[in-house]
Image (cartoon, rainbow, N blue to C red; front, side):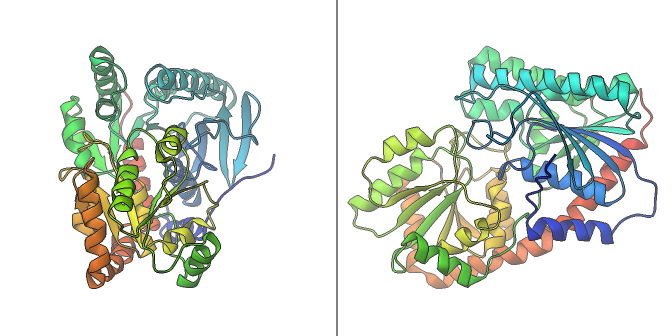
Length: 439
């Protein structure tokens, strides 16, 4: 089967760093279960893929059970037909299983997707128990939550410890996006807590996740913070200039770019309202939404005939850094209610791009904490178009401030968000889990 790696130079660099820091001890057999994997270009997939490849580069024997590529477009990738597929991803054994892909990834549609993947993953893991050596450690990635149950069952069946990587606090994120009624949310919180409490160890993608996860009843000494890393390289300025010329973006017009998923959590209606306010005020900002997602069609309809708004389909890994470099401001926008339960992965890419970041997010959110630590951007309250426009005007009218923020991002990415140390930390966490007696 054709190998689809999708490795960018930054990802390859991370593997080389991991190899350079390899510990001279025996490798483990690691079974990793996660819905998202490359070639999905954004969200959780780059990190699950990076962990799998990085651990393999350190000498571990890694097998992955994952879904069919579908995110952020929320439609199945045409190059991945069939019910079960097997791939060799540079030494990582990948099994892909079928699952439904809903048009609306909230409520019943999300439950259907997760249940389908959990059942497919359970079947694949059952087959692995009959045909492959016993894993030393099982690792599950959440979201998706229901497949964590399949990983825990697999760990119990093979008497192996199980670690869970929490990329979003599932039940709290559902609250913020109004996914289902109160009863459904209480059930989600109870299920998430029960599953995480059964894990040998729980890794959190951000320090801010400690409070909501401990509120689910998970012991504090079972938690380890393993932050995500930068998985893109900074583009040469000339590449950004070339994108700007090709896209027809006037150099005198500030380009405000949002990259990634267009879903409920991003609440990009706020960006469109800001664009309309800018147009009505005679301000020259151009708003570019790069990516795809469940809300894209509705957003395009809402944008209507706004001349200062542009939608761009997802671009390749090679072109993505140049598009970030072509912008004057990189935008993060979150739905009201997202506090300490979600760490937006786009910030790791934004920081590396060398552009000022403007974030519409609560002051106690994980994103706000990252901006304060990195000093690479400004924060305004979510769902307030007038505040977002004021922030853009501040950056436009104070070029020295914008330059300082732009310079801080790459420094922070190099010092705190390098791939090699992140993979080494995962290796240490998994080895610690592997040393824990099974019970």
